[in-house]
Image (tube, rainbow, N blue to C red; front, side, top):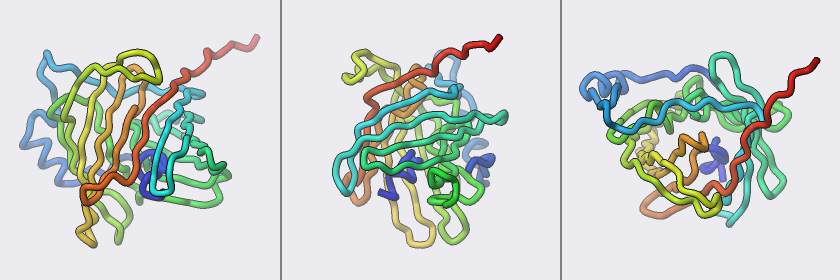
Length: 229
């Protein structure tokens, strides 16, 4: 299950600014599509999440099916997000994400233990704005456990999400993660919804086999703030 939380929540699911590698800069320089989209291309801008916003997911992993929720606890002035997740087995974590919805670290519910730390970098699942053809390549993780993520937005589509009873605009990404010390590789496929401000589906694969996956089944917007008089 550690693999799953490394993604979003399980994952991913603390927050420091992204340490963009020289490889990322080279890609952006050599490929104009990495920095700007044609005028007529659909684009997903960086979302603005609100305290109290909440998402629920059905998931599966090496130990079987489970359910988890994800909620925004705090939004920092620099855009970093303090998130909390609860699983159906009773476990919970607090996480720090970047403004681009990328995990930086995860902690025990009381913050006393660091469960996962990407070493002053972020797990770059997204680089907003998103549009088909955009690519990025970055290193992340602490020294000794460095990884390289190579990602590309491969599809823009409208798709009905049965659990929510409606169709939504989605931007879908595929990536490959290389473990620098061992050469091990993993692949991930996931789709983001601008309207729901979250990843709505995810599959993690290794050696052609799916090891984890999840899908959004409920979105609860933040309640309006009531002014105190």
